[in-house]
Image 1 (spheres, rainbow, N blue to C red):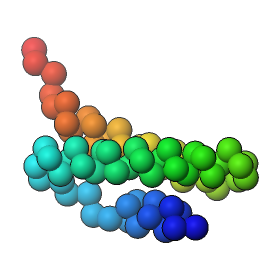
Image 2: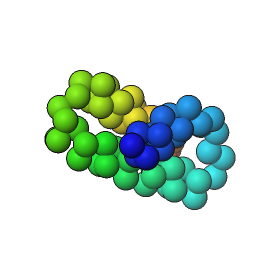
Image 3: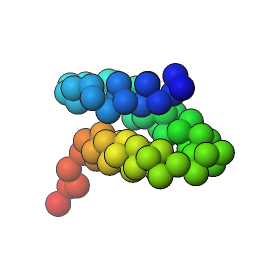
Length: 73
């Protein structure tokens, strides 16, 4: 279950991405983790895996929101 360890490690990591390149790398990494966990979920149908994917998706959305920046008015 290496992917679950990787997912939990990413979730507990400090989220202080100072540069855009760090945010891009983090966004791609979390996307890869989510897709891998989804493959496990398809096989096992474990609700804990779904909860993990939801938590990671929240983190991913926060990172992507910072990447897009504030809307210009």
